[in-house]
Amino acid sequence: MVIAVYLLILVAAFYFFIVRPQRRQQMIRRQLIATVGVGDEIITSGGVFGTVVALDDETLDVEIAAGVVVKIARGAVAQRITGEDRSGDAQGDPHRVDDAGGDERDERS
Image (cartoon, rainbow, N blue to C red; front, side):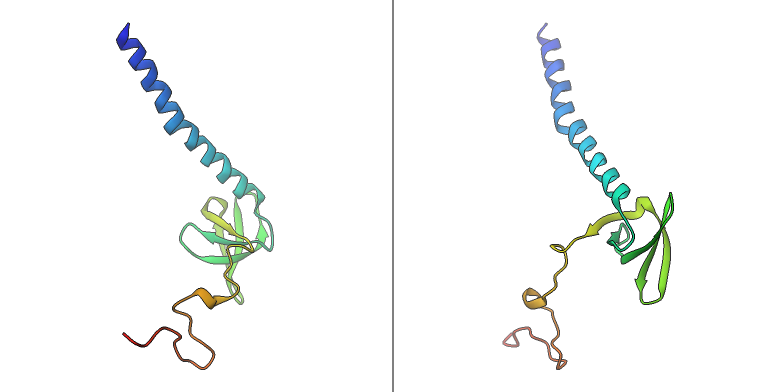
């Protein structure tokens, strides 16, 4: 009887710590892939940044540079870039190069 209780606790723990979080992640990923639209800025699973210019059922046409359009699978979308994800002002970037070509890092080292 004690073994059955331990086994039941183990199964419940496995469900709550492994299965439920994984299902939630899968649901979020499916929603992301389903809601990607033309004009969205995305990051692919390979780390390529681009803007969606056309959609098909299973693929996306993504512009990765001016005039350079690649076709990727919808499943390759890792995330959609929103206004909060973009660093519009690079003041906090320690490796930012200013307009004069000089590096803004502290030169005292």
